[in-house]
Amino acid sequence: MNLLEIRDLRVSYRINGEDLPAVRGVDLDVQAGETVGIAGESGCGKSTLAGAVLRLLPNGTRVTGQVRLAGEDVLSMSWGRLRAVRWNTASIVFQAAMHGLNPVRRIGQQIAEPILVHEPAAGTRRAAARAAELLEQVGVPAWRVRSYPHELSGGQRQRVMIAMALACDPQLIVADEPTTALDVMVQAQVLNLLRDLVRERGVGLLMISHDLSVLADLCDRVAVMYAGRVVEQGPGGRLFTDATHPYARALAAAFPVIGDPASRMAPRGLPGDPPDPRELPSGCPFHPRCPDAVVVCGETDVRLREAGPDRTAACVHVGVTQEREGIR
Ligand SMILES: Nc1ncnc2c1ncn2[C@@H]1O[C@H](COP(=O)(O)OP(=O)(O)O)[C@@H](O)[C@H]1O
Ligand SMILES: [Mg+2]
Image (cartoon, rainbow, N blue to C red; front, top):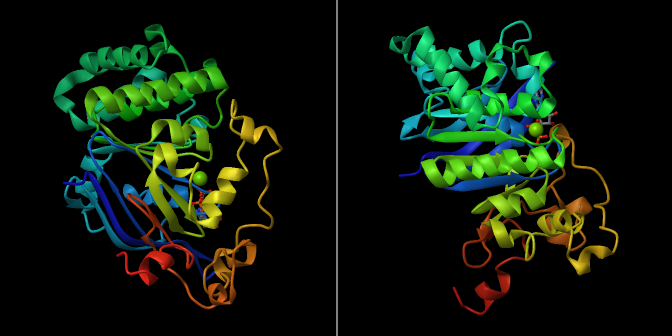
C-alpha cells in the first residue's frame, strides 16, 4: 500500500474573487522507506502540494481530488481525525524555520507540545526528556531545550523544526525546502539526518527542493513540476542527466554540477518566466518557452505518458516514435 497516494489533486486559491489554480491535476505516490523529490521553479505549486497533504492551506482554498495517507482520505477527514493525523502519521518541515517557532516559548516546550497532544499519558517530564533526546538526535546540544528560538542559529532552528517533525514518530515526512536557508555544511548534516531516517526507520520522505543536486542525491524518484502539474517523473539519480521533457532538460541545464567537466561552461538559463496561473497559455503551458515547440503544442494539452522504463513525461515529442513503430 502506498503511504501517500495523491490522485488528480487540484488546488485553487481564491484572491479578490478570482480563482488562481496553483495545482492542476497531480498524481503522486510515496511508499514507506522511499524518498520522492519535487523540483520546479518558484511558483509552480510545490508548497501548495505539500500543504494539501495535511490540509494546511488558507481558508477558502478549493481542493479537489484525493489525498490518501496510510489508507485514509485526508480531504474528507473530520477535524478531530485530522488533528490526530498531523505530527503523528505525517509531519511537515517548512522552509523559513523562524516563522514556525514561537519566539516566546522555550525550544524544549515546543518540541514536547506535539508529544503531549498525542500522548497525554506521557506526562510533562517524559515529554521533556524526549524533547532533549530528539534535539541530540538532530545534532543540537540537549541543554538547548531551555533556549528561546532567537538564541539559536538558523541551522539550529531548522534542526529544531526537524526534531518537532520527528517527535511523534511519523510515517511520512514532508520537507519543503528544509535546507534552503542553511549554509552548505549544515545543509549536509540535515540531509544526512533525513537520509538516516528513511534508511533506519523506513520513513517515507517527500522532499521539495529547488536544488537538483540535493534531489538527485537523495531521492529514489523525482517529479518535475511546471505550472501546477507534473511534467516528468523518473528515477532520482538519472532524471536530470537524461531528462526527456524539454522543461526538465532546461532545468537540468540551468544547474551547474560541481566536478562535472561538461558543466564547466556557464549553465544555460531558461528564457522567459513561468506563466501567470490565471492566464495559462493554450495547449502545453510550457510551449511559449520551449525550444522544441511545434504548432500542435499550442493546441494540445498533453498529459503524462510513458517515456521509457520508470519514466513518464508530458510532451508531444515523447513516446511518439515508439507508438508509430508499434513498439508498445
Ligand atoms: N496563500 C496563497 N494565496 C494565494 N496564492 C498563493 C498562496 N500561496 C501560493 N500562492 C500562489 O500559488 C502558486 C503556487 O505557489 P507555491 O505553491 O508557493 O509554489 P512553489 O512552492 O513551487 O514556489 C503561485 O502562483 C503563488 O503565487
Ligand atoms: Mg515553495
